[in-house]
Each structure stands twice: as structure tokens, then as C-alpha cells.
Length: 288
Image (cartoon, rainbow, N blue to C red; front, side, top):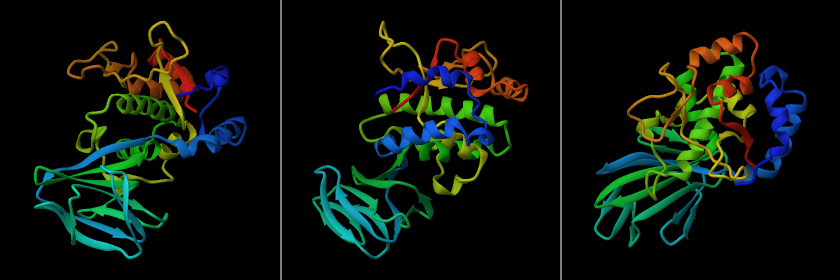
């Protein structure tokens, strides 16, 4: 991953306040993401595991692929709502797919809606027949993934600078998880990260705006002796235990709590200053 290192000095002094974004920050992020939004990484979230069947519904035009062979099966113009189950010799979704044990459902229009057992999900769906049971993975762009997991956690308002720090830490951890996936099929288990699909997101929430304002920003620590290698880590908020916690392998906890970060924000300190105190050995990087 390439890094926009020449903007680090700007990041160190810039406020992430939503109301201040009409100036240079909006211009900078706009330029960066016109170039790189199409290359946004995808997070594979396990949303159904080892179930006998599920109800998969699509509203609108969509495409079907066999991800195992990376081959196109068909383009469908009408919606569909049927049970998905494993049968002898393949998958069945209303119709049977002989010899196919993996199925990818991709929306073909922005208005197409995918849902599993009544819950709507962004991105695409991967259906797996694993030993005669059904598992489903939601493949979603990273920034949308952050909205889904963070919005329900921050219903009560925090200062904009504190929310910006929250977004950067969460994105850092998400990139770490992408580089260290749970297994070849999914990156994270949805039940473990509070992943609730589209129903949990509000595009106009302050948390969603903070994610958009900090898009592409992660914390990085030097990897070995090289300062040119982007190294996101398992960054998480500390609980007041001096930057350490037990029970979460590989996690690196902040040296301040979220409450202390909010206090700093209310005193006028920006997200970069908050993060410098939370993770003094890390720097903010822009992923291009």
C-alpha cells in the first residue's frame, strides 16, 4: 500500500471538525479519493454459520457468480425470495445449482437490495455449502463496514474530534484484520464485532460524518527497520489499565481511555493530538 507521507505535517495540526471541512481538508481528501475510491478494500464478514437453511432475498437486478471458479453464472433482472439450502450435489435457491457449492450474489444496480432472513446488507453476499450446512459472508467495502459497526456504539453524541479519533483507530484495526484474516473465507465474525447490516447505519449521523472526514487514515507503527512500510496494528481503546489489557491477543491498547479522549476534545485538542497521546509510537498515514 502506498502512503501519502508528504501530508503528515498537515495532519498533525489540522482539525477534523465537520464544520471546518469546507477548506483545505475537503480539497485534499476529495483529490485523494477521486483517485483511489475504486480500489477500496473489501471486508468479508461472516453473518451466517452452519445453518440448515436461510431466506435470501434480492430486490432488483443482480448477478450470480461461482466464486470457486470465478465464473459468471447468469444476470437476473427480477428479484427473488427463496430459501437457500444444501442438497446432494450442490446449492439450491429455489432452483438447483448442480455442482456448485459456492454462490456469489452481486447487486447490479445501486437500488438493488440484498437481505438475509429479513436483515438488509450492503455489498455482496457469498453463500457456502459447508458439509451440508449454509454459511454466508457479507463482502462489504471497508468504509461502509466501519459505519455498520461504529454507528450503534456511538448513539450518544461525542465531540467531533473524539469521533474522528474513534474512526481512525477502528480503521487501523480493520486494516490489521484484513492483513490477518480469521481464515481464507472471512475476515471477521459479524457476531463478535456487532455487525448488524444496513439497519444499524445512519448516513447523516456524526459518526458516519467522522468516518467520511477521516477516510483513508490509519495509525502506523514502524515495521522492523523500515519506515516506508505501512504497518497498521490491532489498535483498541484502553480501559484505564495503563495501555494494557488481558484476554485479547495481539491487541495494542491506547494509553488513554475514550473518556479522556473526549475530555481532550472538549478542551479544544484535535484528533491528531488525541491520537498522539493515545498511541505515542504511532503516526497517522494516508492510504492511497
